[in-house]
Image 1 (tube, one colour):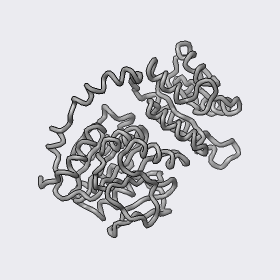
Image 2 (cartoon, rainbow, N blue to C red):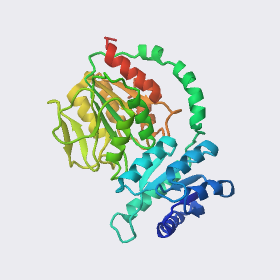
Image 3 (cartoon, rainbow, N blue to C red):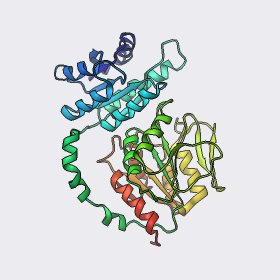
Image 4 (cartoon, rainbow, N blue to C red):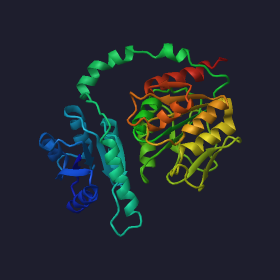
Length: 357
């Protein structure tokens, strides 16, 4: 049995979430509380395997509760939030930064056409996240003490053994579960003078993409935008695929946003983006497949490799879920396997010092 603690301030929604989760025979709801303070206090008694966490709550909000739990007694936390509220979306990604492993939109009511899919996704996500091994996050003071040690660990040596057969003109990244923090880690470390555009597909619940782009933008030296159809692909810009659309790059140097069918059940799909990058940029591209469940993008990363692109998969140790990068590694699609920190250093090196292998 997977033990779940539900944290939600609205009584009706709290009961609704308990109903959805309890409908699965493998899940047992061990507690349902109304704010973050109660969640922190109940941990020792309930001992949950997973926590579903609301964001906007009295006494202690979801971000503060997530931060405290990850510092004191780490448990996989799934944020279940209202995507329509800009402030809540902003706080949601602060909770991701603090250690939450997934973000979902609050399920719609039983009569809504999306109810079954949203309820199923909640149950599946909770089950999957129960298997994730989370680590203790240090407090702000402790992180300040250790930052100098972190800065002493340089991946420069590993970067220098990565080579490109041609000048890099575009970088394509794909991610799912655990991707927001991995992407933020990479993008925050790219220098201000980074001259290559980055195109990204991140699987995410509808309504969160703009808030996600804003959150990445606050951490990055480079401009981050949700992509629009027909936009020129500009040097040093970061483009995020919008909700519910496929994104591709064209040989003309423009972005295409289409209503093409989902691939691997997903829209936007990493596979769709990577295939267009392989066709339009070939050996002038870098493809990066990050943490996430499933296999979206794995075959197409191999296609990019066959076209001469540099291909990288995130390593298992740093992945929340090693599904997508793991599938790419099995296929021989990844030329290199690195953590997000090392990927950032390698991108900086490749763009500055591209050379013939």
